[in-house]
Length: 161
Image 1 (tube, rainbow, N blue to C red):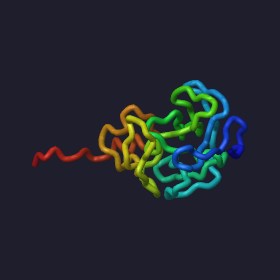
Image 2 (cartoon, rainbow, N blue to C red; image 1 turned 30 degrees about the horizontal axis):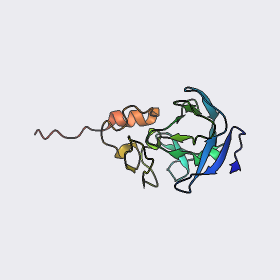
Image 3 (cartoon, one colour; image 1 turned 45 degrees about the vertical axis):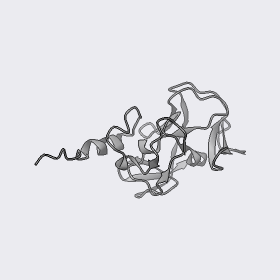
């Protein structure tokens, strides 16, 4: 367990996969701001360690411990890119891993992966919102840039000519 830059969180190892993660050391209620974030650097392309904050901006997060916030198809937090805040979607207890739904901010990911979150809502392959079938984002809080791109996506052909 390594301390994070904020005493309310710690960087830890995930039990089943050995990945690094962020754990809360305090309780948060649904709607609480866990922490605000900024950009240590801004890029025009995604990388494994960036967060997409607009259609063409991907940031390296500050505080840096937020880069270890892992994906879940049933997350307990979201990155509100407009307010630059991580917000609790449901109660978070001390010791809980802080997770978010990657396609909520990522249109196309630099490093797609097979999800093993264990949620009944698990989507399997995670490659960004652009790769999800219609309706897969239902019930998830998505960033405005993702919502705009989804609205512009051409619906699948109905087979009519």
